[in-house]
Length: 182
Picture 1 (cartoon, rainbow, N blue to C red):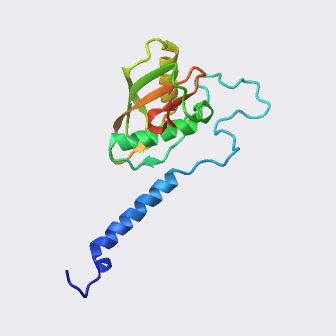
Picture 2 (picture 1 turned 60 degrees about the horizontal axis):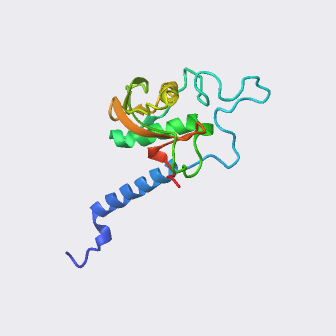
Picture 3 (picture 1 turned 90 degrees about the vertical axis):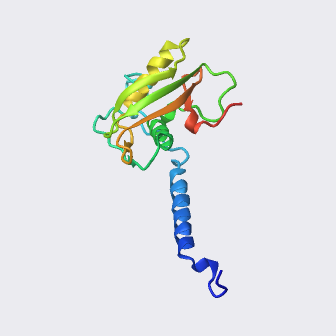
């Protein structure tokens, strides 16, 4: 190594540092949460006569023209995080807060195909909770109603898999974003 040249003046180290800073910035921006006490995104308006939890899929937006940002994911594993975040944002009041109890009512592994427009083209159970057919139906309804999903811009289309952890209260967590179990 040239003694007159500092390791910090290496052009590759500048690119490495810039890439590292960009990754940290992306990670921090992905971890932002809504302010404490903010109402859930799809809470019903005051004075509404429709009880919460009724309709085709409780807690999901019903606007068919809903658009989502494109996903920057390069792999199905990375896309799974974007999809889980999307499902959580549309079902905030249905997410189990905190650590799940040791005994869950149902656990299912679902594979979902998303096309280039964010539409669900197929759902396929790799492990369905057969003892709870109502949970199977509700998960499928929830996934289909969440479309359009973030656009898989870098992949064109994507097939991702996630594990649904279902509590007897009807609230759930996805394995991708779980807070763990007691």
